[in-house]
Image (cartoon, rainbow, N blue to C red; front, side, top):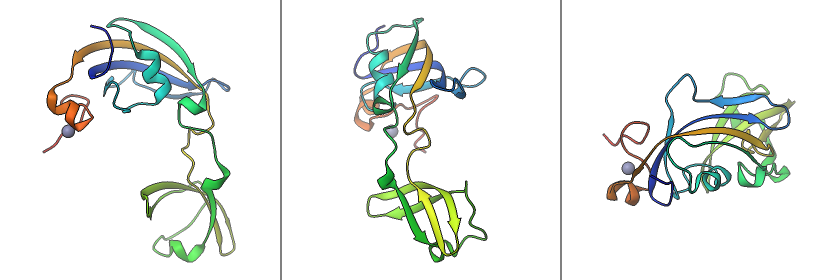
Length: 162
Ligand code: ZN
């Protein structure tokens, strides 16, 4: 079966930073990843590269930041008063925190603490990186009507609604 809109696709993958060759993530020693094609479940560049591929196909693709997790933006780096973190025992660079905003919950990383000012970065950790993917297509099946309606996969590797 060929990968197209509304197919449920199972892949094994390995992804590394294409500049440094540093391994970022791999499914090799774990469960493969299952996603609903055409529903923006995965980064656009990888979805595009998989379009038209079939079970057993292997591909290697380098995806620029714009088609992956986006460019890094200085606008997403902000300084906030330390008192915003008063519920935390300590506030140190490298710590990941979540914040409630008008747009919902966002993930931040504390990058600097200077006196009463804390610098937080809301860029995705992989923003600005070109990613090199090695992918093997394990399985392709039709999505159920319910999966299409929900925009994600149910069952093994997918959402569990109980
Ligand atoms: Zn669902």
